[in-house]
Image 1 (tube, rainbow over the protein chains, first blue to last red):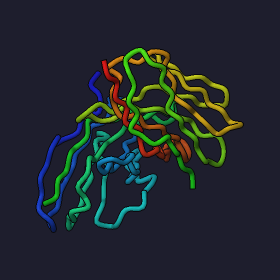
Image 2 (image 1 turned 60 degrees about the vertical axis):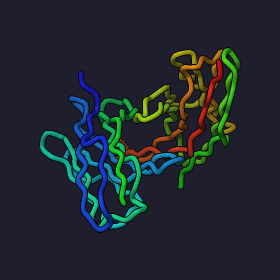
Image 3 (image 1 turned 30 degrees about the vertical axis):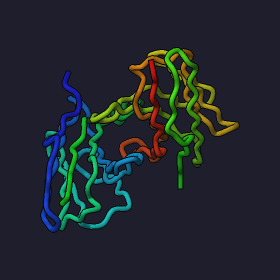
Length: 114
Length: 114
């Protein structure tokens, strides 16, 4: 089975632009979460979606938004990019309801804002 | 809120040395605990987990025991290899099923010299 896949792997954007990052979870996983990992730090929680509904939101500005599609894939959108948005964006999928709590991560999208 | 604190790095060891990376947590209730590993340029990989007090997680020679009395989940390996060089993250899960998120420590960079 394929793991969590994210696209694109790398992205360079200019301040003020908008970006869309994509994630496909492991087959059978209905929950997707997004994390931001700034260089040298641990990942910080941004959003969680389960069954196409937002189930959690971290301490991020409204410039960050996300959605989950009927096939359980997800998009993370960031508007009005700032230099400080430069980070590795990680997507994780989980399978709630199975008693298994571990999250499986994709390889991430490296976003550089210039 | 819940938090995770890891020993500060970087940690540099010689091959075949004994490894300990300390991790302590603050949480309400009894969260599941995890160790994730991140190799250069990659996303996070689950290394091991423990879901209740006194559980021992183990994988690839690494071990960690969930200690409720000391709120700790220290990572150990008896004999490290050069291939173990990576960044290690301790994490806990919080929230209810379908709305869980991971709270990460700041990470510990491990370098193993031949």
